[in-house]
Image: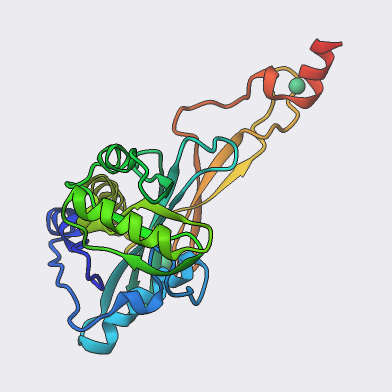
Length: 276
Ligand SMILES: [Zn+2]
Ligand SMILES: [Zn+2]
C-alpha cells in the first residue's frame, strides 16, 4: 500500500481476516507528489485516476503484484452548503491479472470545516476546538496565498499564532483554519477508510464465475422499474449488474428489496394524472 499517512492501519484488518493477505507499506513512496488535500500541488488527473496511479507508485519500489491506495475528497455540497460531506475512493491494482478494482464510499461523517479569521479574532480557539483539535489536526493558510500550509500545530497557542501571522501575510488580512484530512490526523476519516476497506476486501473475496479472477461485483444499476399501475418505466432501479473487469462477464441481479414494481408516485404519467 502506498501511504505515508498510516492508512494501512485501516486496510490491514479486513484484508487479513477476509483474504489472508498481509498489507505492507511501500517504502520511499511520496504520495504527496500526486497532490495533497490542502491543494498545494495540482493533481495530475481526476480523483479516481489519481488513486489508481498512486497505487501503482508502489510497483516502483516493491516487487509485488498487488497494490492499494486511497483518495478522499471533502467539502461543502452544493445543495446544503452547511452540511459538509465527502467521498472516499480506494483502488486495488493486480498487475499480473490486469485487474483494477475501484470502490467508493460517500459519507456525511466528517469534521471537515473551513473558517476564515482576521488577526486577533477571539473565536479562533473555539473554532479549532470545534474541529476536534488537538486530537484532530488543523491547517492554517493565508487566504490570498494558498501555496503554503501551516501543519503540525501542537497547541491552541500555536494555532492562534499561526492564524495571526498568516492573516497579516495575506493581502486581504484573513487566514483560513481548516480540518486536517490526512488519515493519521483525522480519526473520523480513519473510520470511514476502515468501512471502505471492508467493502473492498469483500468485493475481492468474490471470484468471477467465468474466469476465477477476484473482484466480481457491482458495475451498474439499470433504471426503469415498471410503475405498479401502468407498467411504464420509472427512474427507480430495475436491476443491478455484477461484472468482471478482466473477462467482461456480467450477470443481472434483482433488487435486494425484492420489489418488482415502482410506486405510482414515481411514475411521470400516473403522478401527473393524480395532480390534475
Ligand atoms: Zn472474469
Ligand atoms: Zn404509471
